[in-house]
Image (cartoon, rainbow, N blue to C red; front, side):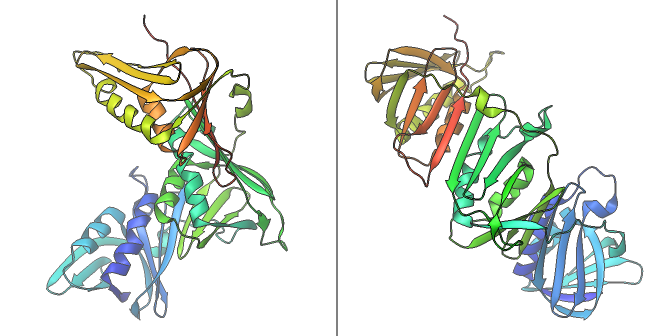
Length: 382
């Protein structure tokens, strides 16, 4: 195999492939990136750790067709540091990959592309189209509440529900819950634009990779499904993953519907106060645990304060409140993550008691930004 690549194109193809390179040191093939140059002018770049994968196609000049696998981390480091605008990749008879540009030359171990694991069907048997900007906004509102390595596998992903006319995405890590919904024509382009009714759980790690690849533009992307996998097509980039094959939690049961205290306030004002409070609440000194954030809703004011061994902070925010005064405590990081995800100038906080979860919604109805966040409180020491 021998091919010449434009450096920027090769870097752009290999970098996202690292997201699906295995780090478990179990199989050399899944620790690497597969470069397959079997068609004139094209190289297919693939990575696959047997759970999630990535594929893209870039242009190149192919002198000798072939397929190889090179350690992904090493390959990315090498191509990034090459001095010229073009990189030549050539496989010697001893199986060593020679990577050269200008006067620089690297040699890396390589294995035959035939040893790379077989991929699932990436065409999908059903699927729908969605704007990148819409999907990006929805992911921004649920990623903060996806668990990391939770004992319950369903909490490590986001729950997708389609019914033909809207897309709903839900995430919950046990301390925070995020719900976002958009009215969209969810039509199955594989079956004569029939309404697509599906429920599936996508691992958070894959959604984080997709989130990096999409942008706030109205260009379309495609979400396709098979029996066990979900595939995200973003231009020339393809991300795919196994669906988390279990039932999602009955999240609606955890959302309190009988709140009787309603507070409207400016989102940026609260975010600013929380960011300042983090300077105190996140401080750990002399073995002390994180300090809780105290939120006291009195009249038309929200008084935010926290005290730790390293200092004290207090902020006041103007509010519009209906209902009784209340004092409630939160983990500052959890509340700040939720507020940063709002994408709304004003929010409404709904409360019932100091030990009941607080609900965050947009202050005014907005069909293009329909969300609900829930944050659990913490007990405060008097």
